Length: 303
Picture 1 (cartoon, rainbow, N blue to C red):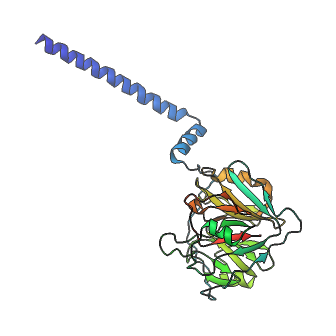
Picture 2: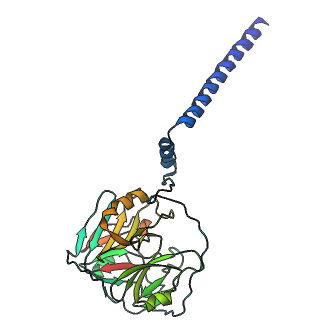
Picture 3: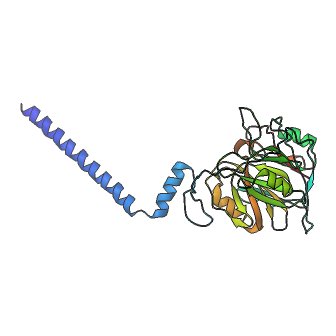
Protein backbone atom coordinates (compact mmCIF):
# COMPACT_ATOMS: atom_id res chain seq x y z
CA UNK A 1 0.00 0.00 0.00
CA UNK A 2 2.82 2.35 0.95
CA UNK A 3 4.64 1.56 -2.30
CA UNK A 4 1.57 2.49 -4.33
CA UNK A 5 1.36 5.88 -2.55
CA UNK A 6 5.04 6.53 -3.29
CA UNK A 7 4.52 5.67 -6.95
CA UNK A 8 1.50 8.03 -7.12
CA UNK A 9 3.54 10.84 -5.55
CA UNK A 10 6.39 10.30 -8.01
CA UNK A 11 3.95 10.35 -10.93
CA UNK A 12 2.31 13.51 -9.59
CA UNK A 13 5.67 15.27 -9.20
CA UNK A 14 6.75 14.17 -12.65
CA UNK A 15 3.50 15.48 -14.14
CA UNK A 16 3.90 18.83 -12.34
CA UNK A 17 7.52 19.21 -13.57
CA UNK A 18 6.51 18.50 -17.21
CA UNK A 19 3.58 20.92 -16.89
CA UNK A 20 5.85 23.71 -15.59
CA UNK A 21 8.35 23.12 -18.43
CA UNK A 22 5.55 23.30 -21.02
CA UNK A 23 4.15 26.51 -19.52
CA UNK A 24 7.60 28.16 -19.51
CA UNK A 25 8.28 27.07 -23.11
CA UNK A 26 4.93 28.28 -24.46
CA UNK A 27 5.25 31.56 -22.57
CA UNK A 28 8.74 32.18 -23.95
CA UNK A 29 7.56 31.49 -27.54
CA UNK A 30 4.69 33.98 -27.32
CA UNK A 31 6.84 36.65 -25.68
CA UNK A 32 9.49 36.34 -28.43
CA UNK A 33 6.87 36.35 -31.18
CA UNK A 34 5.15 39.41 -29.74
CA UNK A 35 8.30 41.46 -29.26
CA UNK A 36 10.31 40.20 -32.27
CA UNK A 37 11.27 42.90 -34.83
CA UNK A 38 9.16 42.92 -37.99
CA UNK A 39 12.20 42.21 -40.17
CA UNK A 40 13.12 39.02 -38.34
CA UNK A 41 9.57 37.73 -38.62
CA UNK A 42 9.54 38.50 -42.35
CA UNK A 43 12.86 36.74 -42.86
CA UNK A 44 11.52 33.63 -41.11
CA UNK A 45 8.45 33.59 -43.33
CA UNK A 46 10.63 34.25 -46.40
CA UNK A 47 12.93 31.32 -45.68
CA UNK A 48 10.01 28.96 -45.14
CA UNK A 49 7.94 29.94 -48.17
CA UNK A 50 10.86 30.69 -50.54
CA UNK A 51 8.94 33.66 -51.94
CA UNK A 52 9.31 37.44 -51.59
CA UNK A 53 7.31 39.26 -48.94
CA UNK A 54 4.63 41.64 -50.07
CA UNK A 55 5.17 45.34 -49.58
CA UNK A 56 3.72 48.66 -50.68
CA UNK A 57 7.14 50.09 -51.58
CA UNK A 58 7.10 51.59 -55.10
CA UNK A 59 9.61 49.15 -56.58
CA UNK A 60 8.66 46.32 -54.26
CA UNK A 61 6.68 43.14 -54.54
CA UNK A 62 3.00 44.04 -54.23
CA UNK A 63 -0.29 42.28 -54.70
CA UNK A 64 -2.68 43.54 -57.33
CA UNK A 65 -6.32 42.78 -57.92
CA UNK A 66 -6.88 40.12 -60.54
CA UNK A 67 -9.93 41.79 -62.03
CA UNK A 68 -11.10 40.24 -65.27
CA UNK A 69 -10.58 42.53 -68.25
CA UNK A 70 -12.17 41.81 -71.61
CA UNK A 71 -9.47 41.75 -74.28
CA UNK A 72 -9.95 43.71 -77.51
CA UNK A 73 -10.72 41.10 -80.18
CA UNK A 74 -9.14 40.99 -83.62
CA UNK A 75 -10.12 39.56 -86.99
CA UNK A 76 -7.23 39.39 -89.47
CA UNK A 77 -5.77 35.96 -88.66
CA UNK A 78 -3.49 33.88 -90.88
CA UNK A 79 -2.54 30.23 -90.47
CA UNK A 80 1.06 30.82 -91.58
CA UNK A 81 3.02 34.07 -91.41
CA UNK A 82 5.54 32.89 -94.00
CA UNK A 83 9.32 32.78 -93.83
CA UNK A 84 10.46 34.93 -90.88
CA UNK A 85 11.82 38.33 -91.88
CA UNK A 86 14.58 40.32 -90.16
CA UNK A 87 13.60 43.70 -88.69
CA UNK A 88 16.25 46.36 -88.11
CA UNK A 89 16.16 47.96 -84.64
CA UNK A 90 18.19 51.18 -85.04
CA UNK A 91 19.92 53.14 -82.30
CA UNK A 92 21.44 56.64 -82.66
CA UNK A 93 24.64 55.47 -80.94
CA UNK A 94 27.03 52.95 -82.48
CA UNK A 95 28.33 50.48 -79.90
CA UNK A 96 29.59 46.89 -79.92
CA UNK A 97 26.95 44.54 -81.28
CA UNK A 98 26.79 42.35 -78.17
CA UNK A 99 27.97 43.70 -74.80
CA UNK A 100 28.04 41.54 -71.68
CA UNK A 101 26.76 43.61 -68.74
CA UNK A 102 26.13 40.67 -66.41
CA UNK A 103 26.28 41.13 -62.65
CA UNK A 104 25.46 39.14 -59.52
CA UNK A 105 22.40 37.00 -60.14
CA UNK A 106 21.75 38.37 -63.63
CA UNK A 107 22.96 37.57 -67.13
CA UNK A 108 22.56 40.77 -69.17
CA UNK A 109 23.46 41.41 -72.81
CA UNK A 110 22.98 44.74 -74.59
CA UNK A 111 22.43 44.48 -78.34
CA UNK A 112 23.19 47.54 -80.46
CA UNK A 113 21.65 48.18 -83.90
CA UNK A 114 20.63 44.57 -84.53
CA UNK A 115 18.46 42.89 -87.07
CA UNK A 116 15.88 40.82 -85.23
CA UNK A 117 14.07 37.66 -86.27
CA UNK A 118 11.15 35.85 -84.62
CA UNK A 119 11.05 32.13 -85.44
CA UNK A 120 7.34 31.35 -85.04
CA UNK A 121 5.55 30.97 -88.38
CA UNK A 122 2.48 29.05 -87.19
CA UNK A 123 0.91 28.41 -83.79
CA UNK A 124 1.75 24.71 -84.22
CA UNK A 125 5.43 25.49 -84.66
CA UNK A 126 7.89 22.60 -84.44
CA UNK A 127 9.84 22.52 -81.17
CA UNK A 128 13.56 23.20 -81.65
CA UNK A 129 16.55 22.85 -79.32
CA UNK A 130 19.17 25.54 -78.85
CA UNK A 131 21.89 23.44 -80.50
CA UNK A 132 19.82 23.23 -83.68
CA UNK A 133 19.14 26.98 -83.59
CA UNK A 134 22.87 27.70 -83.33
CA UNK A 135 23.47 25.52 -86.39
CA UNK A 136 20.82 27.44 -88.36
CA UNK A 137 21.83 30.92 -87.13
CA UNK A 138 25.57 31.01 -86.32
CA UNK A 139 27.18 34.24 -85.09
CA UNK A 140 23.95 35.50 -83.56
CA UNK A 141 22.39 36.00 -80.14
CA UNK A 142 19.52 33.56 -79.53
CA UNK A 143 17.08 33.42 -76.60
CA UNK A 144 13.79 31.63 -75.94
CA UNK A 145 10.75 33.88 -76.31
CA UNK A 146 6.98 33.31 -76.01
CA UNK A 147 5.35 30.60 -73.91
CA UNK A 148 3.68 27.49 -75.31
CA UNK A 149 1.20 24.82 -74.22
CA UNK A 150 3.95 22.45 -73.14
CA UNK A 151 3.06 18.77 -73.05
CA UNK A 152 -0.38 19.24 -74.62
CA UNK A 153 -0.64 20.85 -78.04
CA UNK A 154 2.77 22.58 -77.78
CA UNK A 155 1.14 25.54 -79.53
CA UNK A 156 2.60 29.02 -79.02
CA UNK A 157 0.20 31.02 -76.84
CA UNK A 158 -0.75 34.67 -76.41
CA UNK A 159 -0.51 37.52 -78.89
CA UNK A 160 1.56 36.21 -81.79
CA UNK A 161 2.49 38.55 -84.64
CA UNK A 162 5.23 37.82 -87.15
CA UNK A 163 5.99 39.54 -90.46
CA UNK A 164 3.19 41.94 -89.54
CA UNK A 165 0.63 39.10 -89.68
CA UNK A 166 -1.58 37.86 -86.86
CA UNK A 167 -1.24 34.22 -85.81
CA UNK A 168 -2.73 34.25 -82.31
CA UNK A 169 -4.82 36.72 -80.31
CA UNK A 170 -4.84 37.93 -76.71
CA UNK A 171 -6.40 35.61 -74.11
CA UNK A 172 -10.13 36.50 -73.88
CA UNK A 173 -9.99 37.84 -70.30
CA UNK A 174 -7.39 39.17 -67.91
CA UNK A 175 -4.80 41.84 -68.69
CA UNK A 176 -1.93 40.48 -70.80
CA UNK A 177 1.19 42.20 -72.16
CA UNK A 178 3.35 41.80 -75.26
CA UNK A 179 6.67 43.31 -76.37
CA UNK A 180 6.22 44.52 -79.96
CA UNK A 181 8.89 45.46 -82.51
CA UNK A 182 7.52 47.78 -85.18
CA UNK A 183 8.40 48.04 -88.85
CA UNK A 184 10.50 51.17 -88.19
CA UNK A 185 12.42 49.34 -85.44
CA UNK A 186 10.78 51.14 -82.53
CA UNK A 187 9.68 48.98 -79.59
CA UNK A 188 6.60 49.18 -77.42
CA UNK A 189 4.79 47.15 -74.78
CA UNK A 190 1.07 46.82 -75.48
CA UNK A 191 -1.59 45.36 -73.22
CA UNK A 192 -4.71 43.47 -74.19
CA UNK A 193 -6.86 46.63 -74.17
CA UNK A 194 -5.40 47.32 -77.64
CA UNK A 195 -6.48 44.95 -80.38
CA UNK A 196 -3.92 43.11 -82.48
CA UNK A 197 -5.48 44.69 -85.56
CA UNK A 198 -4.63 48.14 -84.17
CA UNK A 199 -1.10 47.05 -83.21
CA UNK A 200 -0.47 45.84 -86.76
CA UNK A 201 -1.96 49.03 -88.21
CA UNK A 202 0.48 50.94 -85.97
CA UNK A 203 3.37 49.08 -87.61
CA UNK A 204 3.69 45.98 -85.42
CA UNK A 205 5.91 43.36 -87.11
CA UNK A 206 6.86 40.99 -84.27
CA UNK A 207 5.33 40.31 -80.85
CA UNK A 208 6.70 38.39 -77.89
CA UNK A 209 4.17 37.39 -75.24
CA UNK A 210 4.15 35.63 -71.91
CA UNK A 211 4.10 37.57 -68.65
CA UNK A 212 4.09 40.87 -66.86
CA UNK A 213 5.57 44.20 -67.89
CA UNK A 214 8.13 45.20 -65.28
CA UNK A 215 8.97 48.53 -66.95
CA UNK A 216 6.67 50.26 -69.41
CA UNK A 217 7.24 53.60 -71.14
CA UNK A 218 10.08 54.31 -68.70
CA UNK A 219 7.98 53.66 -65.58
CA UNK A 220 8.47 50.77 -63.14
CA UNK A 221 5.31 48.69 -62.95
CA UNK A 222 4.48 47.21 -59.52
CA UNK A 223 5.00 43.46 -59.52
CA UNK A 224 1.96 41.23 -59.88
CA UNK A 225 3.78 38.29 -58.31
CA UNK A 226 4.66 36.45 -61.52
CA UNK A 227 8.38 37.12 -61.01
CA UNK A 228 9.20 34.57 -58.32
CA UNK A 229 12.29 32.57 -57.39
CA UNK A 230 12.78 30.50 -60.53
CA UNK A 231 14.96 31.38 -63.53
CA UNK A 232 13.37 34.15 -65.60
CA UNK A 233 13.99 35.53 -69.09
CA UNK A 234 13.23 39.12 -70.14
CA UNK A 235 13.32 41.25 -73.28
CA UNK A 236 13.89 45.00 -72.92
CA UNK A 237 14.92 48.18 -74.73
CA UNK A 238 16.45 51.39 -73.41
CA UNK A 239 15.91 55.05 -74.23
CA UNK A 240 18.44 54.82 -77.10
CA UNK A 241 16.57 51.80 -78.50
CA UNK A 242 19.30 49.29 -77.68
CA UNK A 243 17.78 45.88 -77.05
CA UNK A 244 18.55 43.79 -73.96
CA UNK A 245 18.13 40.14 -73.06
CA UNK A 246 18.16 39.46 -69.33
CA UNK A 247 18.11 36.14 -67.51
CA UNK A 248 17.95 35.86 -63.73
CA UNK A 249 19.52 33.08 -61.69
CA UNK A 250 17.39 30.81 -59.53
CA UNK A 251 16.43 32.60 -56.29
CA UNK A 252 17.34 36.06 -57.64
CA UNK A 253 13.83 37.37 -56.95
CA UNK A 254 12.04 40.53 -58.01
CA UNK A 255 14.00 43.04 -55.89
CA UNK A 256 17.40 41.74 -57.04
CA UNK A 257 16.30 41.85 -60.69
CA UNK A 258 14.98 45.40 -60.47
CA UNK A 259 18.08 46.60 -58.61
CA UNK A 260 20.28 44.97 -61.26
CA UNK A 261 18.65 46.82 -64.17
CA UNK A 262 18.21 50.14 -62.38
CA UNK A 263 21.15 51.87 -64.11
CA UNK A 264 20.36 50.66 -67.65
CA UNK A 265 17.80 53.43 -68.36
CA UNK A 266 15.35 50.85 -69.66
CA UNK A 267 12.22 52.06 -71.39
CA UNK A 268 10.41 48.71 -71.55
CA UNK A 269 11.01 45.31 -69.95
CA UNK A 270 8.78 42.26 -70.37
CA UNK A 271 8.85 38.81 -68.79
CA UNK A 272 9.18 36.02 -71.37
CA UNK A 273 8.83 32.24 -71.02
CA UNK A 274 10.86 31.19 -67.99
CA UNK A 275 11.83 28.23 -65.84
CA UNK A 276 13.27 25.32 -67.83
CA UNK A 277 12.63 27.13 -71.11
CA UNK A 278 15.11 29.90 -70.21
CA UNK A 279 18.22 29.67 -72.41
CA UNK A 280 20.66 31.97 -74.17
CA UNK A 281 23.51 31.61 -76.66
CA UNK A 282 25.85 34.27 -78.07
CA UNK A 283 27.97 33.70 -81.19
CA UNK A 284 27.51 29.95 -80.97
CA UNK A 285 28.39 29.66 -77.27
CA UNK A 286 25.68 28.63 -74.80
CA UNK A 287 25.69 31.22 -72.01
CA UNK A 288 22.63 29.99 -70.10
CA UNK A 289 21.65 26.39 -70.79
CA UNK A 290 18.12 25.08 -70.46
CA UNK A 291 17.76 23.02 -67.29
CA UNK A 292 16.51 20.05 -69.30
CA UNK A 293 17.76 20.82 -72.83
CA UNK A 294 14.23 21.94 -73.60
CA UNK A 295 13.05 22.41 -77.16
CA UNK A 296 10.76 25.42 -77.61
CA UNK A 297 8.74 26.80 -80.55
CA UNK A 298 9.55 30.52 -80.36
CA UNK A 299 13.01 32.12 -80.31
CA UNK A 300 14.20 35.69 -80.74
CA UNK A 301 17.38 35.85 -82.86
CA UNK A 302 19.60 38.94 -83.25
CA UNK A 303 22.51 39.61 -85.59
